[in-house]
Length: 89
Image 1 (cartoon, rainbow, N blue to C red):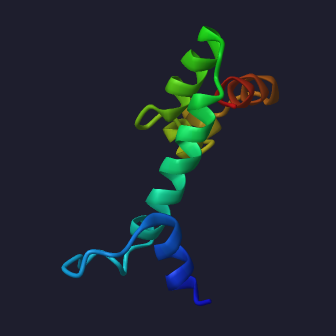
Image 2: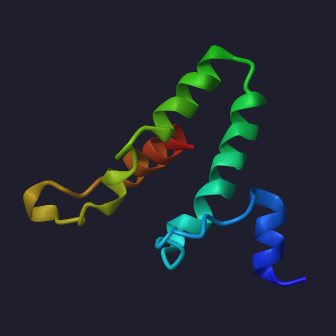
């Protein structure tokens, strides 16, 4: 069984006119959506749901892309990073 036939058996056939098949997100999105639905369906607590929705929000992880430039006050202490990552997870 080829990877393409495995992908199609899991997520359905490709649209013949989709010119996006060369993009990585095109192939990843169905699997990510399935995993997201599985996680969301297993959440029973409102606090867990709030964390999940916050982590899923657009640009919620952008702070991880900031350069740690101390002279501009953009460096986080080890404790601040630990807390932020803990909240993100």
